[in-house]
Length: 266
Image (cartoon, rainbow, N blue to C red; front, side):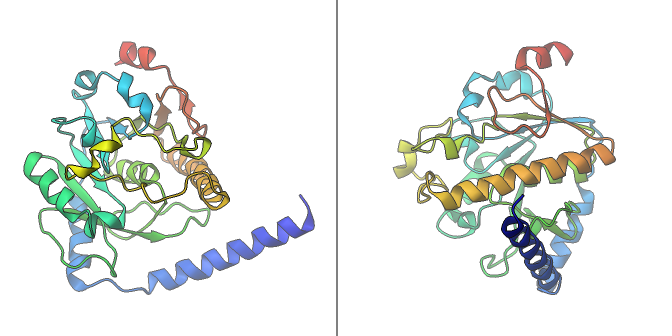
């Protein structure tokens, strides 16, 4: 590696560590800290869970089969899977506490048995809703994954790494990924498995305003790939197995398993 690149990487690591140190002193309200403490109750007796993301490949997944198991869904998943009641749902983008707040309220009315996990942001979170669970995913990836849901966690520009961190914290020993294509930076136009033209009907797409083909987004996605490798290292050290069952996924940090084989095994 050229000396210039090595110097840039070292500078980036130093800046990241300094930033994370400041985050540890970046106080949350007493009410928020109490909310984080409540996450101690999110212990699962089940060994296996599924994380269902919003990639186009999820169209080919038998959700009735997955429904038999503990499932995590994320962001606007239910725009393409109306009526699917998952066990947990992550709203990690701050948008869901701003112009997308009504979407969360409507979601909670439709799926009252789904545990909602929200990202706490001191600048955005106006009020702690006692019916939701909150996580403080404010830390930048510094080579060590912070996954304790009662403390500050490693955040991401993508919700899937955070969902995996939550699943590890809850005690799952086998985590399957579906709909985790992570291919948006290879396409001129962003694609989810749901129809984004529905946005005028009280639905939202958190990436509508992002230019997906620019260099900045490509760099950010590279950091997410790096984060997946570090999560897999953490998982291996804890005896947790993460298997990617997403057809043609670009996430290569985890062992892959064909969806049909997955059905046979379970």
